[in-house]
Image (tube, rainbow, N blue to C red; front, side):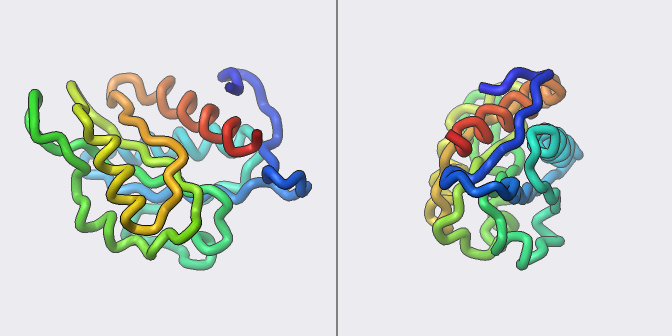
Length: 159
């Protein structure tokens, strides 16, 4: 995994010299998931990727088609102890089909995410995605958790 201060250009697995094209799509209700998306984008850019961060309501279809890796994020909905699920899943389902796209799913939560990340990954797989990672990020620790998640995903994608 790349360390927080390290910067190494991320390259395609087949050894091509062009940087990885990363698109980050988010659905945010209070701003936490948007912030996580921005932090993931900053980490990916620092690693040498070409990055675009967009809300689900403003997707650039060409960017999405050209993406080598897509991060998709939303928030955890449900009660503290049960009923955890992806928030605004109806809006997430409006994303164009992600056939054969490598996708990293991320969510933001306040207290207990339960199994929401796994449910979100399953939703994206039903949408055609090849989900390579799924994680829920605590909204109080976004500044460290979001870039660390991005570094892990990018390191695995370039391995």
